[in-house]
Image (cartoon, rainbow, N blue to C red; front, side, top):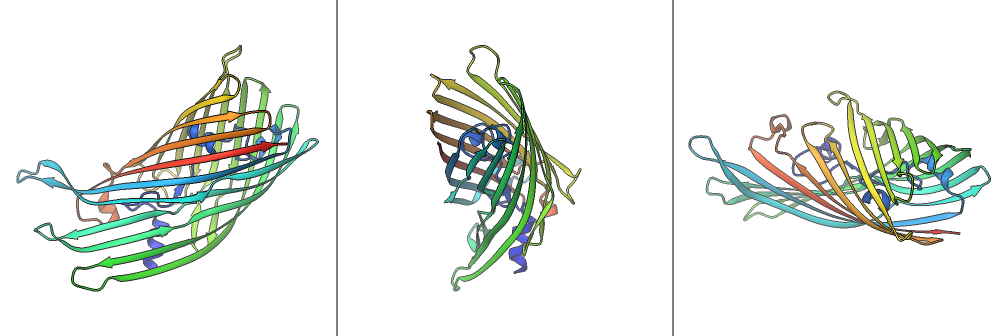
Length: 362
């Protein structure tokens, strides 16, 4: 049980594909724009619901593919690094429901309900132990599954070009672990654990749309914890802008910066940067691409870089969006001594996210 909690709460051991990672995007359009979300017409920002004038339903589905290469650095007799000897490779894929929401306009009020995955605990951890002749003497395989889910009733109000909204999220989920130890000539040992957890989070948002060419938004969510996990999640401030050059240029530029206030983290604050561009083609088709970077919340020298791309189709009452994200995390600058690893490892991790969203207005 202690090993399970250590891996689940520690969140940053090398060899983990997305252990404890935030889900930095909202729907498929948000993913394609580098994760920018709070200035878009969705429910990521409760105040953004004020932009809806018709009843709207959106459904999403998500596919994740993760890969990891782990190797030992090889040195010659003079201490020169002469290459990497691959020790282990991990690959896994899984499906999960994506963000879904519905909005009901009532005069100045907007009432909404949404489901969203918030944190991703799906990952594999594979470690091979070898002797002096490079023969495998033991293999440790750990498989973790779980999401932090949120179901949120939301209310928003609009006055002129101002929108204000509040979201009360009920957080829940189940995290499971399976550990397998394989030793040649011995029977494999398997250990399984499972934890159910719950919590609560409030988010408030503001949306400002003074002209058709400019929009700004801000959201705040407080620090919260999840019962049974005994872990705390950060206070978050998010600021986003959208700008479309006046005239007939059908291109929107969006950007968002988030400040996560973690307790016990060096400098206490982690900044996440998101930018994206959306081109409208023939008033119906959309081409999108973006970029997002964020550091690890224990070792700030480790950064995850995400490149995103997407396509959209929108008619009078129907929309279809496809988003893709390629993420890469390199532990080249990691301090392994603090993690208790005596080997001089090299880790290289990649993730692929595919998200489809469909919406109907009526």
